[in-house]
Amino acid sequence: FRQNPKAGSVYNMGGGRFSNCSMKEAITRCEAITGKSMDITYDPIARDGDHVWWISDVGRFQSDFPEWRLTATVDDILVEIHDAMVSRLTN
Image (tube, rainbow, N blue to C red; front, side, top):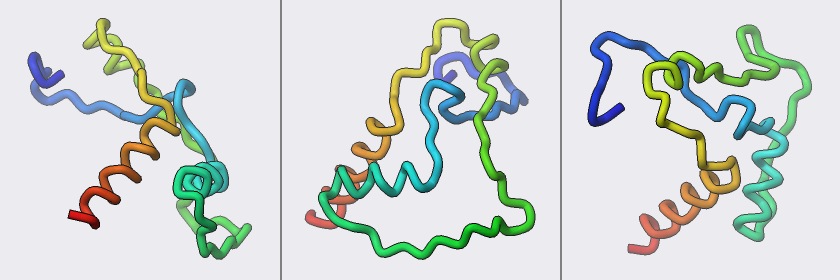
């Protein structure tokens, strides 16, 4: 995309069915990555407008850029975020 952008194109991006998880799963994974428990509060009642579940359709992007592939898993992304924050906070 960066090398050959399609002017005016709009894409939904995310992991599609390849890489997705719920907030509860993300919290569990973050706790495993950091080795620490997170202080959370859970409210089972969704707010107006909240998505109960969302999986992005990346089909349009794949159609415009057929060589592109999803390669990063949720765990890859969470580890990358964690490592970047650790680096940022310790430098």
